[in-house]
Length: 299
Image (cartoon, rainbow, N blue to C red):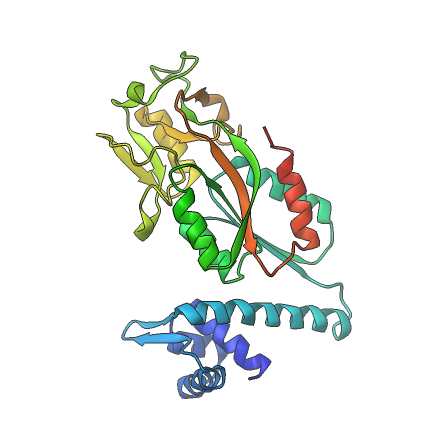
């Protein structure tokens, strides 16, 4: 198979449609279909499932695409350095749960790197997607947490996908609420104190369960529950609806930090936050810089 064919496969996967990918590539749909079939025949696997809505990667296809991306990226580095005579364009991607310190460390990475040509990606996303991003080698690292309730399921998935988890820091659970919340003056709270208020949490899509939740105690039943997809929305709901969310205790001032308070949650649990990577892929120089930036947040 050729480098051009690998590029085709990446565009098809990102487009989820051979027809749409062909338009982006300025080639005919039959030519692209033929290229896909040729790669599948040569590799001996089915890379895409076909359906009326388009195409979707198979389990084997996800793994194949991860390696294809690596090959294409390395060739782009070679072309940049030896043909275009430009400094190599470095790529680094992190997929993460919604934590302030992962963003702060990312800022430090960009500032430290300081070269003119780079492609950095910070992807705040759902827990299962973080795992898939690293497994498929789209992301160099994935940042998430383990606790007593999710460890068994997530570690089994890590083993299946050939990923390794490295613990970076531990955090006792806290709640975030508005400074005007009825509980805002408390030095600590328990879950029972929160029963009359809306619980705010991040959407996990089809993997909506305590094993993939970003919040501790998500399996505890509540009368009022609101799920959102981004940090800004969760802040507005804390302020406007007296909602609360459970997290690590670190909150950014730029997201209305003066209006939000963090209060310790008196429950017997701890968040062990760390990163996952492919077991056969060592940390790159950029990865090491990023991890060192994260380590300053150890408690």
